[in-house]
Image (cartoon, rainbow, N blue to C red):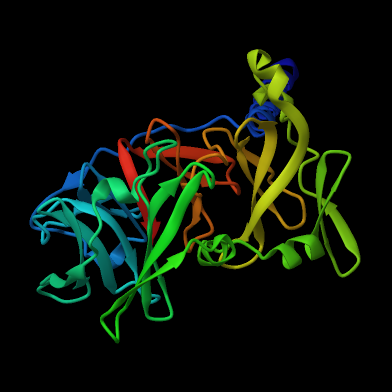
Length: 334
C-alpha cells in the first residue's frame, strides 16, 4: 500500500512540475494562441454596439467585437463602403468616412440610439488613394481632437508618411489644411512626448530601463530580440533602440517599439511589459515600420495587425496572443 501511495505522489508531483515547466516554456517563447473567432451577427443584433470595446473594418464593412461572448456584429445601418472611423471620448458618437462618387465623405452616427440614423456632414474633397500610404498601402486613420476631425493625405516619400492634414471643425463645419505635424500625431496616438520619454526611459547596453522615484527597472532582460534578426538582413542590423512609448489606461503597463534593423525605415517589433518589469512580451507579428500602431483597449489588452492584415489581441498578464479577425484594414477602441 505504501508503495502505491508513494507512486501516486510521485505521479502528481511529476504532473505538477511538467505543468509548471510548460507554463514557463510558453512564457519564454511567447507562444501565441491563434484561435480565430468566427461568429458574425448581421441582423438583428443581439449585442449592442455600445457593448463592444473594439471595432474594425473588413472590405469596407464595419464590425463591432464583443469579448464577453467572442462575437462580432456588423454595422448594418451604413450601406456605403466605410474607409476609416473614430469615436468620441464616451464611445457613443461615431465619425467615419465613406466613398461616394469616387470621393471621401464624412458622416456621423449616434450608436447609442435605439434607431441609428447616419448623418452626412461634408465632402472631404479627397480620394481614397490620397489617403492611402504608398509604403504598405495602409489606410490613413481618422482622429478626433478637441472638436476637430483630422485625416492625413498627400503621401510623400521624403517623409515616408503623409505630408498634409485635413482638419474639420465639428462646430464651425469648415475644413482647413495644415502641413503634417509629427509631434501632434504622436500625441493623438497616445505616445509620450520626447521630454517625457527621456525622463522615464533609458537604454543601457541595449536594454530598456524605466526609472521613477529613483528606482530603475529593466523592461527587456527576459526578451530575446536576436531570434528576430534575419540572417539575410545582417547588413541592416543595428544596436537595439527603443521608441514610441505609450501607457495602458491604468498606467501599469508600457508599450514600446524596438529598432533592431534599419533600412529606409527602422524595423522591429512592439513589446509590452509591466512597470515593475514583469510579464515582458514581444509582439512578434508587429513592425514599427507600419503606420498602424497597436492600440490599448480599456481592459489593458493590446490590439494590432500584421502585414497580412490579421487582427490580434495580446494580453501580457496571460502571455497570450489571439487572432480574432482576418483581412482587417483598420481598427480602433471605443
